[in-house]
Amino acid sequence: MNRRELVNVVAAHGELEAKQVDATLRALTEVITAVVAKGEPVSISGFAKFAKVDRPARAGRNPATGAPIRIKASKKARITPLKAFKDSVMIPRQAPKLARGVWSPPPAGGSTSEAPAKKAPAKKAPAKKAAAKKAAAKKAAAKS
Image (tube, rainbow, N blue to C red; front, side, top):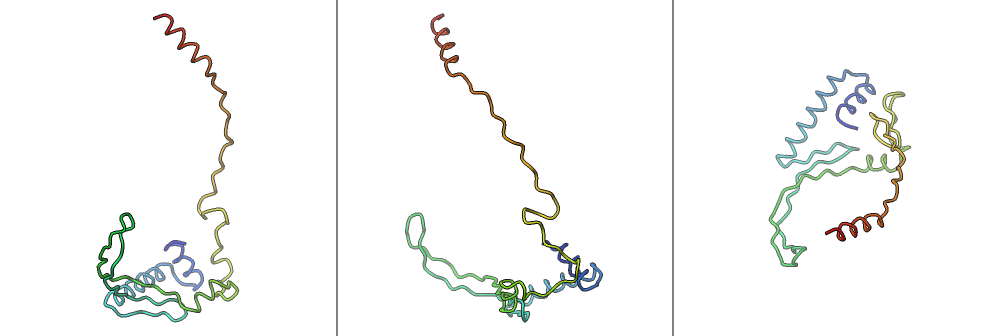
């Protein structure tokens, strides 16, 4: 599901306008990103925790040569799913129920927008005669 599909599903489920949901989603991501960038974690209870993590410098090894190398300190973003979200994903009957007709999962074989393309059966090519090439090469050699 991409952003546009998410906005449409949330709008249908919450009986809201898509523009309003899109603006809210955009504002939510901007606020979470700005707060986490300043170093403050953001936790949405029952869903996920967003945090900035400082990784210290450490020693490592070059996998090609085995030579020791120094890995510099870095900062990473960490998103941790919380228990209620993990439980809902692992046990689907615990997941919240959407309004009827709001969203249906894509078919098992592929994407929702296009039907899977069918491949044409492979055609057998006639076997080439190797002996004919050898005979032609011998005739050419004999003429010169």
